[in-house]
Amino acid sequence: MRNHPRIIGFLGQALNHEYGAVQQYLTQASLCTLWGLRDWAETFLQESREELGHADLLNQRLLVMGIAPSGGQLRPPRPGRDLRDMLLHDVDLEAAAVDLYSEAEAFATRLRDPEAAALFARLRRDEEGHLQHLQESLAHLEGRG
Image 1 (tube, rainbow, N blue to C red):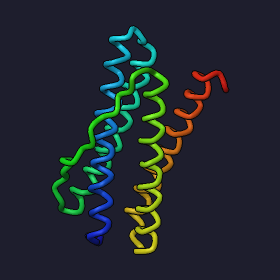
Image 2 (cartoon, rainbow, N blue to C red; image 1 turned 135 degrees about the horizontal axis):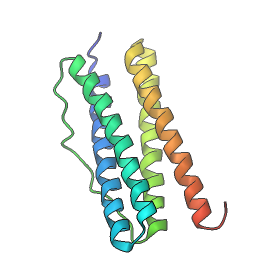
Image 3 (cartoon, rainbow, N blue to C red; image 1 turned 60 degrees about the vertical axis):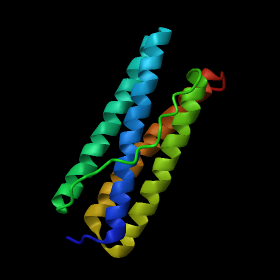
Image 4 (spheres, one colour; image 1 turned 45 degrees about the vertical axis):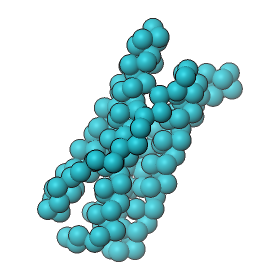
């Protein structure tokens, strides 16, 4: 197993992204609870759990590589002023994840690091699913779906 500096960098970026997503979705769940939108609060809580699962996969990968995980550079959450605004922020968040994981997967493939490539591919697919779900939810909310 290799510890290529750029792979380590991608893993660190990914971990920061996932912890930031957890924070954003938890904040949105809390706002929805305060607004009386219980179904949406549960939806955002579920999203936070999925992102926490991604963070766990990244933590495990770093530990196997002999590196202590650190998610210490979180971006501030973007909760939104209303539900539509929340979904728009989340679309941006998930699109950034897809871009990050696509780039990381391509690099790991070029480096011939199949374990890292497989991890980034799995995360990319999960985030593509999140992105599609968010886009469909937004379209439905706006009466386009």
